[in-house]
Amino acid sequence: MEERKLDINTVIGFVLLFGIMIWYFYQNQPTPEELEAQKQAETEQVEAAKQAKAQDESLTAITTPIEDYNENVPDSLKQAMLQNKLGDLAFAYSLGTDIDGTTDVETDVLALKFNNKGGHLAEVRLTQFVDYDELPIYIVKDGNTNFNLNFATTDNRILNTEDKPFQPSVTKNGENTVVSMKLKFSESKYLEYRYELKPNDYMIDFTIQSQGLDGVVNSSQEINLDWKLKGLRHDQSITYENRYTRLTYQHDGDKIDKLAQMNDDEEVVSDVSWLSYRQHFFSSILVADTPFKSVNMSSKDLVKDEEVDTVFTKLYASKIPVELKGGNFSKSMGLYYGPTDSKVLKTYDKNLEASIPFGWGIFGWINKAVFIPLFGFLSSFLPYGIAIIVMTVLVKMLLSFVQYKQFLSQAKMKILKPELDAIRAKYKDNKMKAQQETMALQSKAGASPLSGCLPGLMQIPVFYALFMFFPTAFDLRQKSFLWADDLSSYDSIAQLPFNIPFYGDHVSLFPILAAIAIFFYMKMTTGQQTAMQAPPQEGMPDMSKMMKYMIYFSPLLMLVFFNNYASGLSLYYFISNLISIGIMLVIKNYIIDEEKVLAKIEISKSKPKKQNRFQKKMAEMMEQAEQQKQMQQRKKKK
Image 1: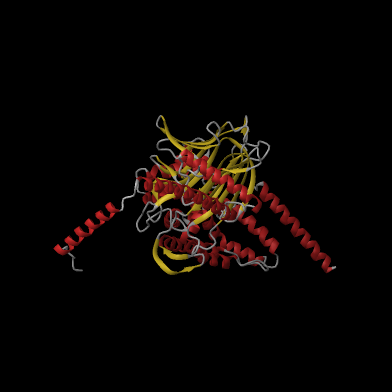
Image 2: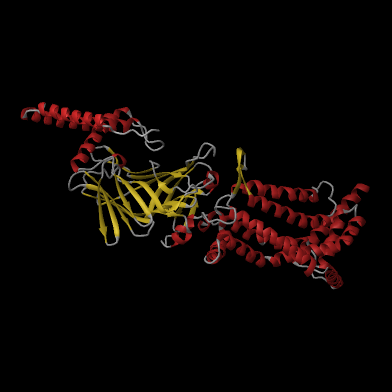
């Protein structure tokens, strides 16, 4: 485009125009009387605009309630509420408070905005973290929360603090920053929300206190603190994130309970120490200085379709009764907005780390006592992906004796198979007798199918503990390894143009590798087991066929179910099954000598075998069953 330049004619034109404007304004200067009248008219116009704005905001607040938050207001109360709101606005203006404004404060880890209308937090940003899309992590933003104290006044009005103007002030208490939000009824009567923020701390000391309200608050009516929050999405997969987003609470001392994981749920719980609105890797936790006597809490699942519901995960709500002390409020609490990280939560000595789903019973104990400290140690000097591999190697080495026991049992059963087949052929018409002889031979030889199953059962607690560890390991969040950008999320290598039910709209590579490793491992182990299987008895399922189906079903389950899971977990299963294949080959080819095992079996068979209580009981039961069968056959012959 050609650049336009000013010529001499244009300059002269601007000068003339400017001169004419000066002359015009000089000729039309108002007289002093006109200036006074104009000033009066402007003052009246400003006041009229203020009143119109107040009326408009009040009517909007009444007729357009916040989604899922406000109750419908009966028509009979609208006019009274309107008058109250206009009075509140007028009082706010008299104090110089911008009712639509916020009071902003920032610490080392939190950037906060307090809403002057309602006195509660309007925005909470965690300054040290970003989401999967490199955007800031917000726990509170754009009206996704509601914090409201509601009570009846002595003149039978219902007061909701969310609608009222609070006067803000920011002061210092040593290194701490104190934000005071006061709802003033007069200069000597007020309700105060007091927030104290400490440097480099995610916990905010929160106090509800008042002065001179003993003649304002109707103590005979119910007083409730309502806290509601819509969980904002932070993870790559909203479905996976929602699976670990849950309301958890501690009550009756140290009991930990949760609302439903994926369905809507509601509970009324007494003696609550704290309640956590967990959003997978980030949490909002309300901690009571003294336990809440009763809390009515609910959780609503907002993710119905991942294609559509991409902003919110769950809607949490809690109604907490608040008591007066001497006619005034005095309740101390803590508000935690921060990472769901066990190391951080432990520092508060409130058992807040119990809000993390490490698993129940022995599974949680294994995670807390073994895997969390072990992984923390390894990741302190190793890259996170390498730390997972090293931890997997250590776990497999620890459980290698279990695999040895399993293969030893399989080897014994393989050696005994010809004799077992001979017994079945000899007593093919007497299944009970065949079973008795089979058990007797196995007992003498020291070979039992159960001896191979029991060691395998020992691996289940470890398997499940790790299944719970990886999705909740905060240290893995946004840590990369090979092609995986985030070990706490799926490792997408291809994006699909459509969504496959249960699978997703992407292809993850680690689950594919894990599925292949599982297939070959099961092919090797199941092939040995099916070779030793006895022919199926009449009316009984063919176990060999079922085991063959499992060879294909288990890898398929891994492929589909883990496509949206943490890539760190899939990496563990991939490495774990590779190691299992290696251990099996080593044990089979270099450790277990079938000739030596056979020699031991022959020695064991030659020695008198003492039966344990279980074996004696089984033998007696089978003997009784055999005698009853013979008696029935005799009766039929007669």
